[in-house]
Length: 317
Image 1: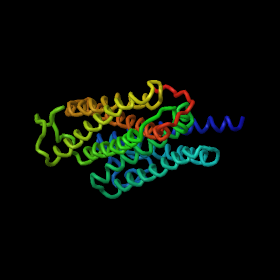
Image 2: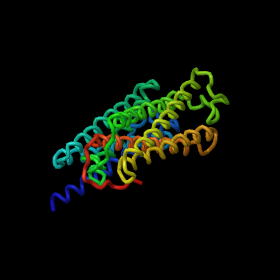
Image 3: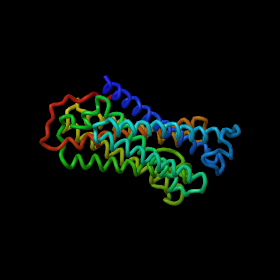
Image 4: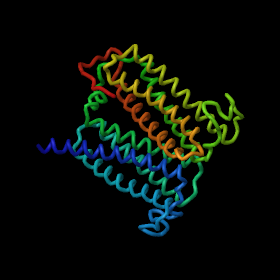
């Protein structure tokens, strides 16, 4: 009975950590898009020298983000303690450890950005570290669900070594694309390309300043989309359609298509009231895509050639 209760709490807390990290990602994007990063001045952890700041839209957005980070940090700490004390899964310990490390790093970067002005490249890391924190908490939560067995022992799929390397290559490359997207925001280069899919009415625009930065991100996203499409076509020949690996790859393909379209939506919505909504949707989709790619990468580790598991894979959406 005690073991069942502990397992139940592990699942609940890991889910709360994952949901909290996802909320932090979206709130961080909201802070950036509304230019509320200086809403609390150069004070941290206080806001304009007060524990409860005076009401302004910018201070409310920034301080709410800080508050949520603090609450989620405590939930993650409780999850970490419970995992270290009671979990027998080594992968769970790695996931919760990774989540703690990157949560601390993104909190430090956030504080540094408030106290000392940071460059665009450094600020872009803040979103990248938050994304890694979310990915680790998502993997931790999946350990305690029906998907945990596929991550732990595989789902019976056999993949060639080249395909497994390609999966991890795409995963790493997707992080580079995410970083470029964050850099576009933090370098205030969003308006570098007017129009979509063309950039300023040209297939290849003048590659300088903000235009070059945005165009580089667009090309990188297109390459990622092509890579995931090719990966899906290859895995469709090697994996059963009911396998977790096949379903994760298919979902990744759907998400990258939606992500690219949402990027176009962001560009076309500039100057309109729906711009903020479009930007938040863009951040939401890339977070989901990166999480699924992480799950695919972990599951592929157990899909070695000639290794067949007698295991029925759970169904992904």
